[in-house]
Length: 267
Length: 320
Image (cartoon, rainbow over all chains, first blue to last red):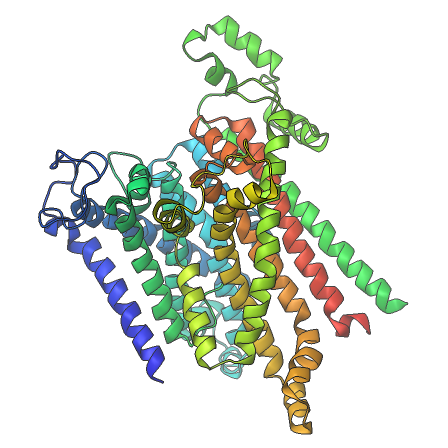
């Protein structure tokens, strides 16, 4: 079993690097993110600018370090909301039949709208501010969290120790919070990680289309978009933001896949 | 007789539920448009909005009616193939969408044509050789692709094949396509990038479905009986995995609906999704709503097809 361990180490390193740059990256940035520091644009990597400069002659390394914070922060908050709401309603649905019907039907509507499409409709109507983005991402990924939590809770609820607890006369809230929920922590944590990846990908997709994070702020998707003109000269300014994003998402998926024995990353 | 009746009823139920969901989606899409500050008349008139002009335009666009009535008008228009006029160009939306939709369908169709055979072959092979090097390589490669944004795959492909090697054009203009060779060259990059995403998903789901079948006890029994490996896979495991595989194909193709948006923008492809992205930028709500409904409807068609195939492929339901 050597291979999985390597995959785990690679994945964990990639995720660690991305999280570290989200936490302390802006402090390490050699230049101010808005400062035009190079007379040339799209210059290749050099000692002064390790990742080259962007379409205005700004330092790409500094911009990537700051943009990672936006990507991680927005995705984390949105995933947190989606997971909390999803788990709350998932547990509620698992314990009541008419509630289950109503909630499942309601979340099916959101699932039936392709996620990028849903984001586009909401952004057309409300504009692309960061709170709107967080809200949209949370709404898009709540149904998935709901389905997972509901299915997991139903599985556990069918086990003997729940029957025992029920015949002991425990109340519903005790059973749900003290007996069922602790047994779901592992799978729910894995689900959280996967959902975070999807959220980060959708956010970057929106920003790449110019409909996500708006200037003066920028996330990794927005960096790829603003430098797309450099693609023709193979400028590092367009490649490195994309690679930074990929290292976060690939690393996280790889880690979760090896930890859970790999059967989950298809949702 | 009773069995086929049962299956028919099950399928009819699925279709009814899809239609009902689509109805609810249309409600949701319409409701979101109500959140928009101001209305279409203000958006069109802009600076020149005098109260009289506003009132006149609102009346002519039926914006003075209450929301439920407008919703009904919009829904009936959609069903008759008349989704209204664009706020920005003032042209009927149906005429703007139709040629674009054909282009998008062409792109999606070609991608499906490429990705389904590739994905099924690789997925089944990985399942048969599960645990081996081939399976591990495919597994890591598919996780890598699933977790990378579509625009990264597309930009890297452009960088390699168009910028460095000069083999293929970086943009997909359909204007000067006059031979099959040109057609292939124009479509190669977008189809390849789009196929990457769908293929990776489809491989993972196909592999899981075939693995499930291969580890079941009846296949184990057949193996102990001495059935040769090829017949074990093709004759015993696959027929029972068809339902889940069809499900995997349909679900992965629905992921194409999201991918196509990004791909059309990168390659400047004249499809309906790029029309939509431009419409979002100019906040052309009627156009956005129409395209959103088209995409949701296609998604529901795919998912419902997956359900129906799964029902038809399930012998327990067929012979009940």
